Length: 317
Image (cartoon, rainbow, N blue to C red):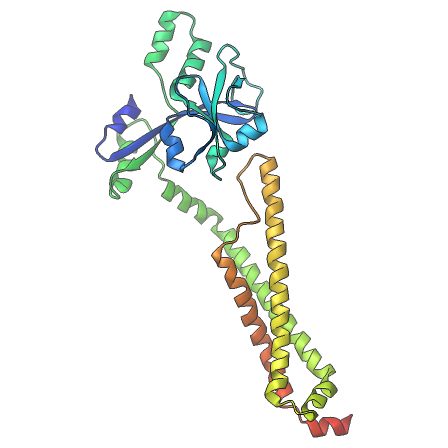
């Protein structure tokens, strides 16, 4: 009744109910409406959506791990651990399977809210009068609310917290709070990355400086054969850029392989999907940053090679 009252509020554009509590082989069974699937833009891979209570639609990961296909029946159990009370007298029938969407739906088994109510009412009611009393007290666990105007995002949560027994949680506020909590760790990682970049620049500088000192005779010979000072300096710059390119390719390949490994481990734990084959535009800055660092590191060795006195060097040799 409280959720229905919120749905009638002029500030609410849409309310999607969610009823939680049971699971099947570790995958949560969620009572909701088809609007929940539409909200994430998911598509059906097999079968159809539920048309009546006690029909279910399995997410891609849940269907694959639990062997759920259209027409198969299964029984939910209370809780998430798999050892809860099994509702053996109220089985679900799989009506469809969702295509992978890379969202939370992949790990859920969706059904009508009436299914969740009927399962628990049948399990706890002792007679018909008790069943009617339970039907009058039907509840949902939470509701996703979409507002009609941006102003409602500011005023509506306060309205819910002050005038009802429910608690409002604005996703933007909670995500900001979470990022503030883990922000210190993010700053530490960025600082560590800056230290690594500085160490890489010093390594390139030392390598090129050592190369100039060890190959002074070769550089002098190039000058005698007609190479200009600018060309000799350009050779060192090209060497630095090749080092930067090789380091970028190896670093990106290793990073994506490690990300793919973490994604495989998370998938084994039925956690968030993570792919190492996804390339984001921000990655394009890595080779550019590496090239800039290499150019800066090669500047002094290149100038030293350009100003080298060939006659004095050959007399010394």
